[in-house]
Length: 400
Image (cartoon, rainbow, N blue to C red):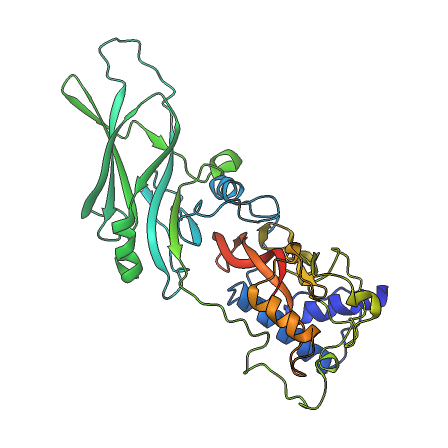
C-alpha cells in the first residue's frame, strides 16, 4: 500500500511539475496508466476552470481578510453554498495595490480577467487611518473632504484626472471606506492601456485656510498594514459552460471499442477518493452486481475529493477538500417515495418487472439534487479569487 501511495505521489509530481523528493527514483517512462492519470487531471482542471496551475504560495502569502470573510459568509467550512443569491455573480476577484511609495496613488493590475468575463460591480476598498493628533480647539472642524480620482495619464506626478467619488470623513476615526468604481473599471477592462490607477485627495478647511492630505491611508508596510492594504474587488460572471464529458476528444487515448469500460481505467489510479480522505484503493464493483447489491436501494454514498492528494493544496485556501457524494443502488419495483422516482422511472420499472420488453432495463440511481461549491484560491498571478461552481455536490439521489 505504501509503495502504491509513493508511486501516485511521484506520478502526480511529474504531471503537475512539482519537485521530486530528493534521493527517490523517478517513475518509469509514461505508459497507459500515466496517460489516464494525465487525462483525468486535465479534465479536473477543466471542471474547475484552471487554465494554468498557480504556484504554491501557501502558507507564505496570506489572503485579504475581506475575501476570507466573504467566503465564510457564502459557504460553510466545506465550501458548500449556504443559500442561493448570497454572491453577486459567480466569480469575485481581488487585486492588491501595487504602489508602495506614494501614499495617495493606488494601482491595480487587472490583467487576470478572462476573455468573455462579464463585470457586474467593482469596489475600491481602502483603509483610512485615524489622525493621532487631536486638536483641543472647539472651532476646529473634525471632518475632511475625501475625493477619489481616476488618473488619466501615467508618470510620477500626473496632472490629468477625473473625479469619481467624494464624501466627508471624520479626521479621528479609522476603518474601511468602499467606493463604487464600476464604470471606471469597465473602461479599463475594455482598454487596459487606460488603467493608470486612482488618486485620493483629502481637504480640510479651517479659518478659510485649506490644508491638504491630513488623512492617511494604509499601505502594505509590515504585518498590520498588509492586512489593511487597499483592494480592488470585482464581481463578475464567467459565462462559461462546462462540458460533462470525462475526457476531451483531443486528449482521449485510442482504445479498442470491443473492450469493456472496466478494462479501460486501471483499478489503482484514483485521484478522487471514495468514502474517506485516505489514499487507499478499493476494487471496482463487478459488472454483474451480487445478490446483496441487487436489494440495496438507491442511496447516497461519500466521495471525498482531497486537494492535498491531487497536489493543489499549495494554492487553494479553502476548503482543503470536499465531499462530492455519489449515488449507488438499485431501482427495483416497487419504487418507494424515499427513492424520489420520476413518473417515467416508475413506468420503466413496471415494464422491466413485467418483462414487457427485453431491452428495457431498470431505472438508474443518479443525483437528482445538486448544490454548488465555492473555492477560495490564489490564481497564477497570486490574486485571490472566490469562484462558485454549480452542480458539484450531490445532496439527494433518486431513480430516473
